[in-house]
Amino acid sequence: MKLSKLLAPTLKEDPADAEVISHKLMVRAGMIRKLTAGIYSYLPLGYRSLRKVEQIVREEMNAAGAQEVFMPVVQPSELWKESGRWEIYGKELLRFKDRHDRECCLGPTHEEVITDLVRREVRSYRDLPLNLYQIQTKFRDEIRPRFGLMRGREFMMKDGYSFDATEEGAEESYRQMRDAYEKTFRRCGLKFRAVEADSGPIGGSFSHEFMVLAATGEDTIVSCDSCDYAANLEKAEIRCLPASLPALSGTPEKVKTPGVTTVDDVAKFLGVNPRAIIKTLILRTENGPIAVLLRGDHELNEVKIKNFLNVSELEMANANLIQEVTGGPLGFSGPIGLRNVVVLADNAIVEIESAVIGANEADTHLVNVDPRNHFQVNNFGDFRAATEGDMCPHCSGTLRLSRGIEVGHIFKLGDKYSKAMNASFLDPEGKETLMIMGCYGIGVSRVLAAAIEQNHDDDGIIFPPPLAPFTAIVTPVGAKSDTINEAAQKVYENLWSSGIDALWDDRDERPGVKFKDADLFGIPFRITVGQKALAQGKVELRNRKTKETNLVSPDELVSVVKTQIDSWLAEF
Ligand code: ATP
Ligand code: MG
Image (cartoon, rainbow, N blue to C red; front, side):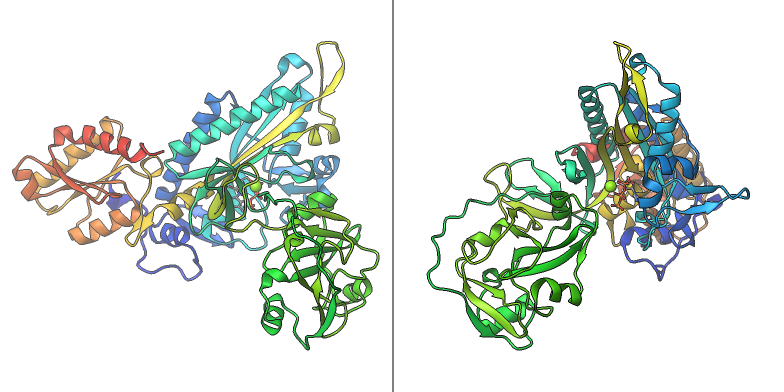
């Protein structure tokens, strides 16, 4: 491809609406253009990279025995009503009516459609296991589409679904997909980690997210510094040692704390450490109000509470509800004398020797409180978000926090959809049995954005070779000379015929301009063809990542590039 003919409109300035580097660089490199909020067109460079991600995903899915299908984007509401998700899926599900007044939606995911397909076509245990996937546009009407391809409304996903006859079979399918995902992201040349993810109240670790490690990631990863435990913050468990403190002597005493409500202010006002304060959160669930007690410096983990109580709604109570439950105003809640609520306490509070709590009375707190004696708790448990330095649930190691971008998610669904939609088969005894399902997603377009978040510098993108729109760019300098142009063309043709896709910067531009664009595009290898090197029978090879340049003879070029690709990818 000649660069002079390529639609790659580069920009000097960052687009005004771009907050993250991948968004800025993809627009500046002319890879994508926004049509409207969260909806993008891919220009040639962007589309080539997207297709490379797709191809790696496709090859690894096929190698794992999955079969590619292609399902419709428009889905009828009937299927979603059968699964029960028409009512509960939020506004991300874009619903509309066709000309015959039939309700439809744009597919945000395809469990319903695939379950419907498979229940019609599969009758016998002999047809199982079955693993089907597609690579297709998804639509989710995200409330805050942002970060370019990272959180779009329309985006490219690989979604796969497995159907098994038995639990063991389903676990094997899950394991195969997990392995295939590891291979996929490794082949992409990305640093990533598979982490345990929340799988709802059923629990277990039958859900993993694949996180590309990047400081700008929206997700927090909790990992152990000595074993291989790693989990999403939503899911991360914390080990707590049994309480060892003796009972406290004396009784709670009231102190006046006029207008002092937050943990930090109370700590300052009373001259105590926030760790000595127990904060009492009053929350509302669909089954009534609850109180959650946490150490002052800890944060609530909503997912743990939802799973423990098996509720789907959880929000902070308003002042009226707080008054009703505690008898006092917002900001002074405490666990003594609560009415008609389930009280959940995080394990960490029992280790507070002498605690400060709200007195359920305006401008008042209680001190000298013994969390082991002075109030009632329905359940102690692990209800808080893990913090740096907490104890690993599996070993004596310490938990560390880092950031990641969720690029894949695998999930053992069990019979959730097969039961709701009656997807069954005849087992060897001729008995009607429900299929056991799993679902497996990869955010194909998000992988591109994540790759750039992880690999860039001040000059632009540094694409890992497998994802680069072109692996190499041939840059003649002094392009007015025929010898140089002929040499460049030979290099260019030789690269292509050796399986290396190359771009040819045939523009009549200054070398500086050409080098700048090559860097911005993130092309892994730049081959400069110029007078001085040619005089020695050489061309100059520059590695975008190491920034090293080497003079190589055109005959050796392909093998040197291949060796450099291998060493680039060796760490993955
Ligand atoms: P998130 O938590 O980021 O909203 P999700 O958990 O809702 O994602 P899944 O339903 O697990 O997403 O979808 C599978 C994959 O699709 C995700 O792992 C992610 O990589 C990708 N994905 C999800 N939503 C978007 C989006 N709005 N834009 C781009 N990619 C997305
Ligand atoms: Mg997910």
